[in-house]
Length: 88
Image 1 (tube, one colour):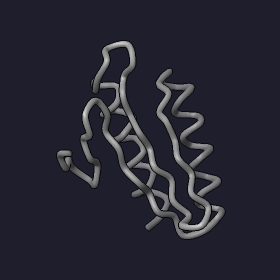
Image 2 (image 1 turned 180 degrees about the vertical axis):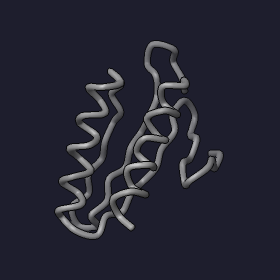
Image 3 (image 1 turned 120 degrees about the vertical axis):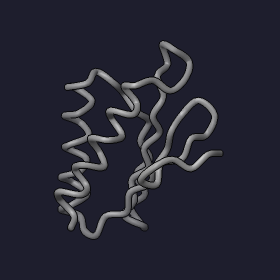
Protein backbone atom coordinates (compact mmCIF):
# COMPACT_ATOMS: atom_id res chain seq x y z
CA UNK A 1 0.00 0.00 0.00
CA UNK A 2 1.36 3.41 -1.01
CA UNK A 3 0.03 6.77 0.17
CA UNK A 4 -0.60 9.32 -2.57
CA UNK A 5 -1.59 12.99 -2.50
CA UNK A 6 -4.80 14.19 -0.85
CA UNK A 7 -5.43 10.99 1.10
CA UNK A 8 -5.54 8.60 -1.85
CA UNK A 9 -3.98 5.18 -1.33
CA UNK A 10 -2.53 2.99 -4.07
CA UNK A 11 -3.37 -0.61 -3.31
CA UNK A 12 -2.28 -2.99 -6.04
CA UNK A 13 -4.04 -2.06 -9.27
CA UNK A 14 -6.34 0.61 -7.83
CA UNK A 15 -6.40 3.88 -5.95
CA UNK A 16 -8.80 4.32 -3.06
CA UNK A 17 -10.07 7.11 -0.85
CA UNK A 18 -12.76 7.41 1.80
CA UNK A 19 -14.70 10.66 2.06
CA UNK A 20 -16.56 11.52 5.27
CA UNK A 21 -19.50 13.87 4.82
CA UNK A 22 -21.24 15.94 7.47
CA UNK A 23 -24.87 15.49 6.56
CA UNK A 24 -27.31 13.75 4.23
CA UNK A 25 -27.60 16.76 1.93
CA UNK A 26 -23.84 16.64 1.27
CA UNK A 27 -24.00 12.90 0.71
CA UNK A 28 -26.83 13.24 -1.80
CA UNK A 29 -25.09 16.05 -3.68
CA UNK A 30 -21.82 14.11 -3.77
CA UNK A 31 -23.50 10.96 -5.08
CA UNK A 32 -25.24 12.98 -7.81
CA UNK A 33 -21.89 14.53 -8.74
CA UNK A 34 -20.29 11.08 -8.90
CA UNK A 35 -23.11 9.82 -11.13
CA UNK A 36 -22.67 12.73 -13.53
CA UNK A 37 -18.89 12.30 -13.53
CA UNK A 38 -19.28 8.62 -14.40
CA UNK A 39 -21.36 9.62 -17.43
CA UNK A 40 -19.02 12.44 -18.45
CA UNK A 41 -15.77 10.47 -18.21
CA UNK A 42 -17.26 7.08 -19.13
CA UNK A 43 -15.39 5.63 -16.17
CA UNK A 44 -17.00 3.42 -13.55
CA UNK A 45 -15.49 3.22 -10.06
CA UNK A 46 -16.54 0.81 -7.36
CA UNK A 47 -18.32 2.70 -4.59
CA UNK A 48 -18.92 1.68 -0.98
CA UNK A 49 -21.49 3.77 0.89
CA UNK A 50 -21.56 3.35 4.67
CA UNK A 51 -24.62 4.99 6.21
CA UNK A 52 -23.59 4.80 9.88
CA UNK A 53 -20.33 6.70 9.39
CA UNK A 54 -21.69 8.87 6.54
CA UNK A 55 -18.74 7.82 4.41
CA UNK A 56 -18.23 7.01 0.76
CA UNK A 57 -15.22 4.98 -0.35
CA UNK A 58 -14.17 5.18 -3.99
CA UNK A 59 -12.08 2.47 -5.68
CA UNK A 60 -10.63 3.56 -9.03
CA UNK A 61 -9.01 1.25 -11.56
CA UNK A 62 -9.03 0.92 -15.34
CA UNK A 63 -10.16 -2.59 -16.18
CA UNK A 64 -9.19 -2.34 -19.86
CA UNK A 65 -5.54 -1.74 -18.92
CA UNK A 66 -5.60 -3.97 -15.82
CA UNK A 67 -4.34 -1.18 -13.61
CA UNK A 68 -4.30 2.52 -12.87
CA UNK A 69 -4.54 4.97 -15.76
CA UNK A 70 -4.65 8.72 -16.25
CA UNK A 71 -8.45 8.43 -16.27
CA UNK A 72 -8.34 7.24 -12.64
CA UNK A 73 -6.25 10.23 -11.58
CA UNK A 74 -8.55 12.62 -13.46
CA UNK A 75 -11.59 11.10 -11.72
CA UNK A 76 -9.83 11.37 -8.34
CA UNK A 77 -8.88 15.01 -8.93
CA UNK A 78 -12.42 15.92 -9.91
CA UNK A 79 -13.78 14.29 -6.72
CA UNK A 80 -11.27 16.15 -4.56
CA UNK A 81 -12.06 19.45 -6.32
CA UNK A 82 -15.79 18.95 -5.69
CA UNK A 83 -15.17 18.24 -2.01
CA UNK A 84 -13.03 21.37 -1.63
CA UNK A 85 -15.72 23.52 -3.25
CA UNK A 86 -18.76 22.07 -1.47
CA UNK A 87 -17.78 21.05 2.04
CA UNK A 88 -15.71 23.92 3.42
